[in-house]
Amino acid sequence: MGILEGKKILITGITMDTSIAYKAAEVAQREGADIIVTGFGRALSLCRRVCAKLDPAPPVIELDATSAESLAALPGTLAENGFDHVDGVLHSIAFANPETALGGNFLSTGWDDVATALHTSTYSYPALAVALKDMMGPGSSVVGLTFDATISWPSYDWMGVAKAGLESANRYLARYLGPDGIRANLVSAGPIDSLAKKAIPGSASLNDVWDERAPLGWDAKDATPVGTVICALFSDLFAATTGEIIHVDGGLFSTGA
Image (cartoon, rainbow, N blue to C red; front, side, top):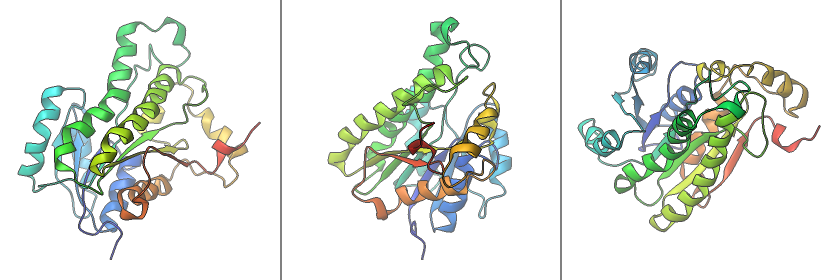
C-alpha cells in the first residue's frame, strides 16, 4: 500500500512531462492517490495532452489562480469531478514577464509587471489554500514550490522577489491554517530543465553552478526526486511539519563558494 493510499490530491502547474508538477502527479498516483489536475488559458490544452500519459489519465479542469471568481468556483468543480474533500494541494504556479521583469531588467521593471509577478507567483499560493480550506480537514497538506530566495540569482530578478514573498507567505499560512490541522510547506528545488526554466533568460547557466557545487550532484533533466519529496509532504509521514522549506537540490543550499 502506498503512502498516499486513498488521498485526494489537487495538482496545478503541469505543462510538460518534464514539469516538477508532472513528476509529483506521477509519484502521487504510484503511491495510491486520486488526483485532479488544473490548467489555464493557452496551456490548458497542452496540460490535457500531457496528462493523458498518466495512468490513469486524471480529470483536467480549468483554474485561473489569479481570479477570485475562478477560485470561488473551484470547490464546486472539484465536487462535480468526484472530490468531496481535498487531502493535498500542490501550488506550482508562477509567472513574470521574461522581457521586462527577468533577464537583468530589475531596475527598469514597471509596477504593472511587478504586480503581475507578485499576484501570480506569491498571492495565488495563500489564495488557493483559502479557496479550498473548507474542503480540507486535519492532516491535509498544502505544498508550494520555491527557488532559494535568501540570495539574488543572475537574471531571476522580480521572480526572486516574488519567491521571497512566497516563502514569507508560507510561514503565515502555516500559522493561520495550523489550528485547523492543515500543514503548509515549500519545496526548494534545484534547476529543472522545464518549460518554466527555459522562459528565464540565461537560466541554462544555473546548471553549471549545480554541476560544480552540489555535494550530491544534480540531474536537471529528472524532477523525480522533487516529486517524491512533494508526495512525502502530502503523506502522514510529515504530520508535525509545517512552515518549512525542504531543499531538494543535491545539497547546494548548504555550500559556500
